Amino acid sequence: SAVISQKPSRDICQRGTSLTIQCQVDSQVTMMFWYRQQPGQSLTLIATANQGSEATYESGFVIDKFPISRPNLTFSTLTVSNMSPEDSSIYLCSAYRDRQETQYFGPGTRLLVL
Amino acid sequence: AQKITQTQPGMFVQEKEAVTLDCTYDTSDQSYGLFWYKQPSSGEMIFLIYQGSYDEQNATEGRYSLNFQKARKSANLVISASQLGDSAMYFCAMREAGGSYIPTFGRGTSLIVHP
Image 1 (cartoon, chains in turn green, purple):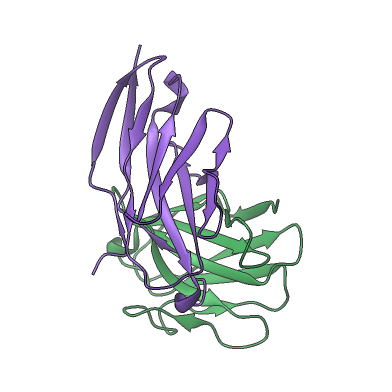
Image 2 (spheres, helix red, strand yellow):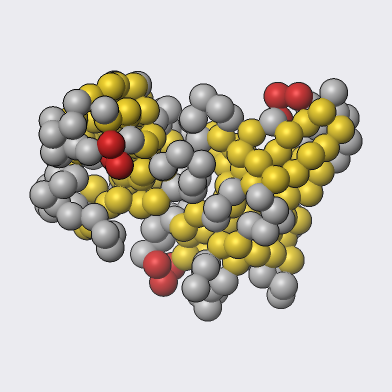
């Protein structure tokens, strides 16, 4: 199994500021993902974090708003830029080593934007 | 169209009884995987059970079993002997070859276990 940690676990931010969330996996993984979960909703995929290249964003999400880095096979960051109250959500990092394997999640980052 | 459908927004069960959470899926791929996750109020996503499309046996993990009916495209989660700690949101998810193995999640079912 893979153990995934995220920092920060929660934060309260002011409108217009940016927050960078870090995701660390305890072993090399093939695929890393970033999800958003708005209150009372299911998980929505923001993007697939690609090692050494630009992330692949889902419809409705853009790089200027959610820049993502993945410098190696165990680490990724998601930045939520120019935040508004609508960005208040849980942000979850997820990963799996290969397509036959279970997908694991980090503990999530609870973000509240005032 | 929804790839994963969970029709039960909320379920209630008495402690120590069994409960079935429904999940149907839509795919034209032959190769896919189905997952169930539990999300307690803390927000973490806890992996429960996995079923591969080529697996002939239903998956089981302790008190969790997956009732996999391939022809009906259903993958229901059965929790036996419910415990108070089972109260949580439960999400069904699928990864399919045609979707580049990027997972899709259902809307979730809220389970409340009564003492």
